Length: 249
Ligand SMILES: NC(=O)c1ccc[n+]([C@@H]2O[C@H](COP(=O)([O-])OP(=O)(O)OC[C@H]3O[C@@H](n4cnc5c(N)ncnc54)[C@H](O)[C@@H]3O)[C@@H](O)[C@H]2O)c1
Image 1: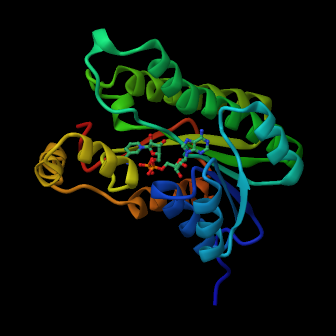
Image 2: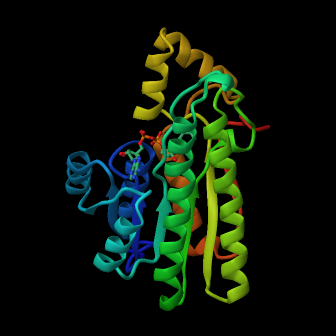
């Protein structure tokens, strides 16, 4: 039997307690990595980690001290997936509060920055690694009612390219790319749908917006992450990979 593609590597997945992050953690574990789930939700995160044979650390991606603690507990990891993110739902732009703007930018963009920086700090002395950021189709194709979310994800995409370029020029052997999902069935999307009133109708509307005709699931995103972190993707860095059923065509 051939060796699992990620055997001997450690992967940290933020926001891995549920949704897309849990699917990514599961997939990387299946591909042979030792997985650390890092999430702000302690109980759910511990349960998810236990179920798949992963480790858990409590981490709020917006807190520098939490990243320092993660680096102290797990100084060597080869793979980092900055997946944790929030979507506070639609709001008329005139009524978008500064607090809500900052909250969204804080988790999605500050969190990705602190994550990338921790990843580079850990991986450069080890001779390399791979960082994958989870962006969004909404960061490419703006959603007018979600200005904060759209701007935060466009920021994640730009950050991804800057980190890729920086690490390449420094000869760090660290690749950094992003996966840009379309609608994926997760607790986040279920919440947004429930808030919009008629959940089944909202689901049909969301599916229709995707040329492929359906909403994806976490495994679809996990498959792209598994490819990007594998040696098959050794020539890929700074890439923004659409996994969106054609939404951004
Ligand atoms: N679901 C979609 O349709 C979709 C589409 C495009 C992009 N995305 C992106 O994919 C990622 C995962 O989304 P999801 O749908 O699985 O969301 P989700 O709400 O279902 O799960 C998010 C996870 O992140 C964790 N998290 C939230 N804030 C955190 C923080 N400050 N620190 C640490 N962990 C935190 C949560 O506890 C949860 O476990 C997000 O970055 C999201 O923006 C999702």
